[in-house]
Image 1: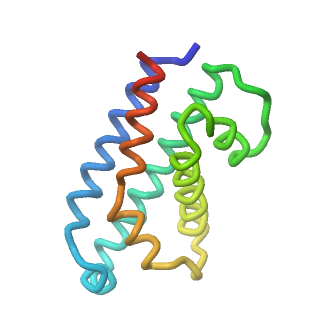
Image 2: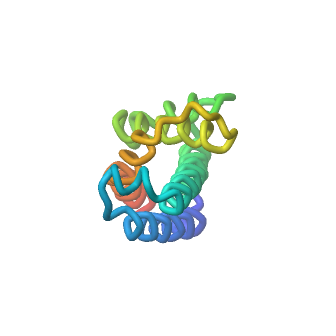
Length: 135
């Protein structure tokens, strides 16, 4: 059984992060590239969003008692049929970016960070799918 209260708390946290990120992203790519403060804020919020998405995914996975897996991406792909392949694909892409940002790889793409921070529709789709699951 999915821990509904925990998922609701995580969804509220995710919503807070989305609101904060949306509030800082009303700029163009050129403005973004010139504003290191907004870059750092958006990078950190994308990391936090990714962490909460994974926490929620783990709760769904455990609650639905899906087959045993050992790797993070396998856990996410186990939810393809539950959340939708496109939503899971975006979560995986955000996890990959999160790993680049967290481990301070100098090769991450500023344009990709901007793109993910500017279009959060997949996170909202994830949240809506999660809410349907726990009703």
